[in-house]
Image (tube, rainbow, N blue to C red):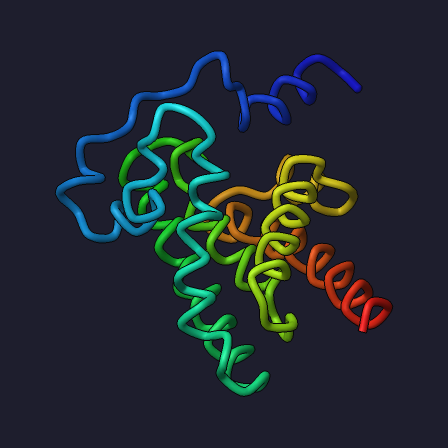
Length: 175
């Protein structure tokens, strides 16, 4: 791989040059949502806190029918793509580390049709964080090559699909 291509791929996630949190997070409702309802402004582990803030959203949806849960998750995903694209353009930073709305979407995908109970929520949380951090193919490819709102959200949707499949397999085997 040539140096220019390697630089362009890694420039999306150069954590040594993390941009500051924009003040607009506290002034613009869309920025507030994109930054995980403020959790993305925390000085460490914004992805973990973004996933934690997803738990109340999941709890509000867990008793819905699978079809209704799926439809709401698809709607939230599409709206999140739009929000992240808009906020990225407004703050001028591609996939700011503090923008963790994608973790909320990914966790909702993870928990689709999950068995009820706190231990399944904890397991879903751990699986999603594993796949979101590890980024197996094609999660890593999407993370490194796609930009804008679609790129921000899609890698977490894929990590959520991996997590959901493992969660479903464990539920099948353990029940």
